[in-house]
Image (tube, rainbow, N blue to C red):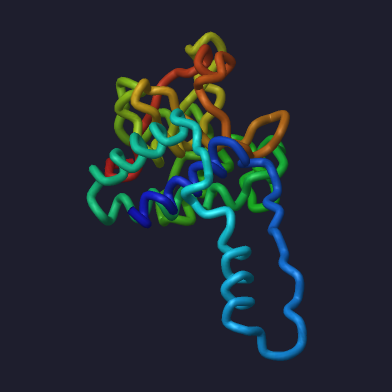
Length: 211
């Protein structure tokens, strides 16, 4: 249960607050002297509010968490660990600017970003999105995608000219992916956005496949 709650909180940052700074609440300093037990309990109650039970999470986000956790649990432990480390490493670059021909760490183009992040996991990718589209194993249906897969996009959903990394997949096959976008740098987008769904070309599985 604790593991699922942690995953839920991480996903909330992916789905809704990927580009929003987190503001931490601070508490007033304690007065001099030793507080009474009742005073200490009151302060503790204040610190613990709001509790997780008071957080209202949209059903769509809960469903996305369940679907993603289910996919991760079907992987063998080694691949699952690599995928989670991969996505964590990728998210650390959210906000990095886009620069054509750059492969990090301060700026990226789309294939430079994917190749950089996978290289951190000891996996070598080809440099261009079109060449990366030839690696690994094809994933025929979006419903079969899993976190860590490469996803490719192109004009009219045909010629590959862009690539990203899947972070979460819903049961209906829509998915979130992290990528280096031309206009806004490294960010997380979703195929529930018609712009991306219309340009989707296909997916390739790299982790657990021959590259």
